[in-house]
Length: 99
Image (cartoon, rainbow, N blue to C red):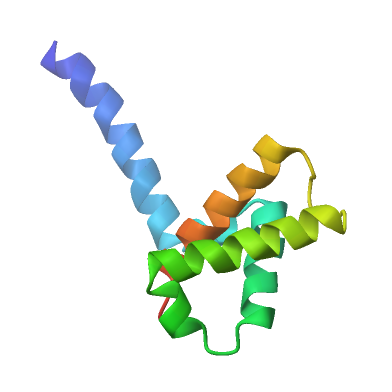
C-alpha cells in the first residue's frame, strides 16, 4: 500500500515543484473575463490599496466593474458566468493587494 501511495505522491509533488519553479501562479490562471474586471477596477480606482484591503469596499468596486462590463458586453453577460468572473477577480485583487 505504501509503495502505491508513494508512486502517486512523487509525480504530484514533482509537478507542483516544476510549476512553482516556472513561476506558474494565479496571475496566469485568471480567466479572460476576470482579467478584464481586474483591469477595470485598477483603471477606475487610482488608489487601490485602501479598497483592496477592505473586503466590503472591494466587493462594491468589483461588483460595479462586473455590471458595467457585462452591460457593455465586454465580458460574458450570463449572470452566473459574470458572477464567477467577479468572484475570481475579487479574490485575485484581495490576494495581490500590495502590487
